[in-house]
Length: 144
Ligand code: DQA
Image (cartoon, rainbow, N blue to C red; front, side, top):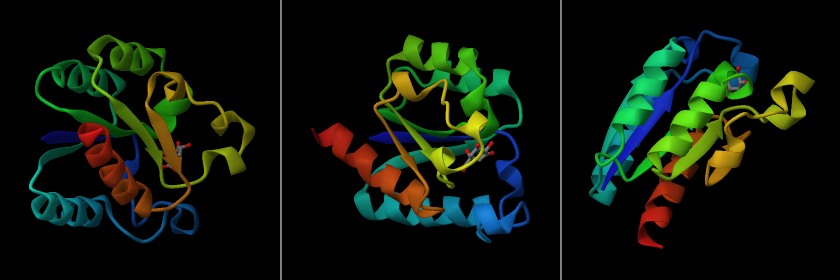
């Protein structure tokens, strides 16, 4: 089983970016922890970040046939991107939406997710744990 983790704009700044909202942990720390979990579970994974919407779209398209599950923190594109939504619909790879913060408890413009309706589910508000919970959910999706 191969899991694709995708991270959208500004998540490369985790650790220094609004730590009161997003925590002190860096994206590299999260990737390292996920790699430990993947090794324990005997699965493989890719972990990518981009500040460019089109690059994320391309990666989703290329996931078809290569990855069993996509876990995506689309960051700000969550709230704006029809292109990401269409890409997720097009590839038919089960996709889990995640967020560090609880987007529903923040500014109103963050309450809407363009991708939620085409994802299998959403995990939001647990900080870095959102990634590890999504990893568990990805394993469950494949075994169900
Ligand atoms: C985020 C929430 C988004 O609203 C925001 O634009 C982000 C990060 C999160 O992980 O909490 O960049 O996706």
